[in-house]
Length: 200
Image 1 (cartoon, rainbow, N blue to C red):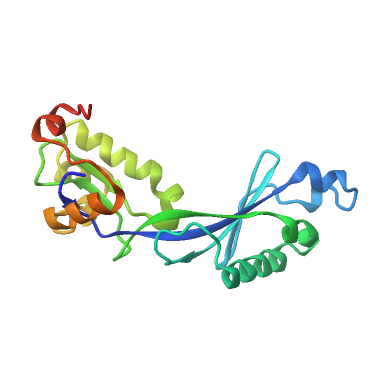
Image 2: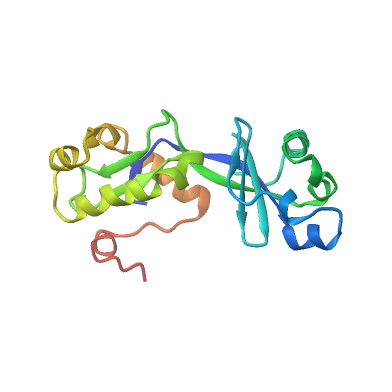
């Protein structure tokens, strides 16, 4: 913590996995009955990762809890069965897991230099779009680290890279930082520790 506030909130996402091998062992379905690529609609994202059929959906604001909310979990399973009725019995038995997606309050990813530091860049807050934005965000960060300006990057890439700037959105907030340190039991680092990266 470096006495900064960023408007990033924990958006709780829901996911479950179904084993393709287990489905095929049941003899009920054949390989052609299973998804082999990304399948999406406005409610669900499903991807095939080797043996794993991974189904994800829903964003919920519920503090820092990673426990599924019963009503939301029920709706999640309902939508998964709607999309893949042939997997109904497996979806009903699958364990639902939740994790936090870092979500920026205005929906615009924080990407670029923090102007109160000489050596701090951020790339955060994509919510459920992290996998879509990862390569492009990494490219911009690499160009900034290499010494290019936002104007140069904008000319090279054909869009205004400043539109994602954390300027005015990532701001000094020492009181908020103290509250967070107290809440999560984080020890305060001295100036020497911050500048050297030594937290021992």
